[in-house]
Amino acid sequence: MLKKKNKIKKGFTLVELLIVIAIIGILSGVVTVSLSGGKDKANTAAAITTLSSVLPELVTCQDDNGSISEYNTASNICTASGHNVKWPSVVKTGYAVTAGAVANPAISSYTFTAAKPSNPTITCDYAKNSCDAS
Image 1 (cartoon, one colour):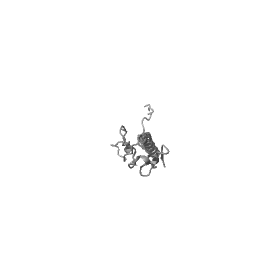
Image 2 (cartoon, helix red, strand yellow):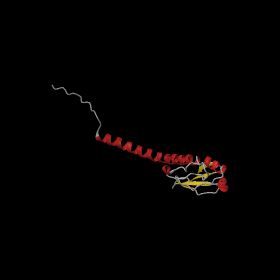
Image 3 (cartoon, one colour):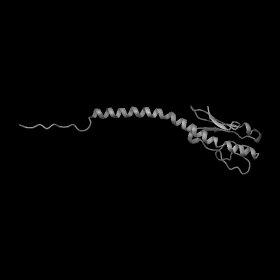
Image 4 (cartoon, helix red, strand yellow):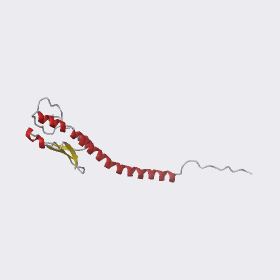
């Protein structure tokens, strides 16, 4: 008599492999959608932080009787001598800044904004000494 050896099945079938790949695809789609909102919030927070760094320079500009330059990342924020702080760039966050030139007496009410399609607009207000998204 011939003895039959019990064969132990090793490996996966094609169907099992396809099911696992489908589950991984569904899970990665869910994660991608849930993380996209987080990236927008992070970009908004980064832009607020960057633009908030301008506010102390506005205070010293007013103290030195200077005026504010129009927004241009290549130019200084203040026209008074000794001020070498450049306007910050928020291009990496996707925001576009709008800030015009202002003579010294109006600095106390100076505001500038950063906008990005389908995201909150960031408004920086010198009088409030803050930048907020709305």
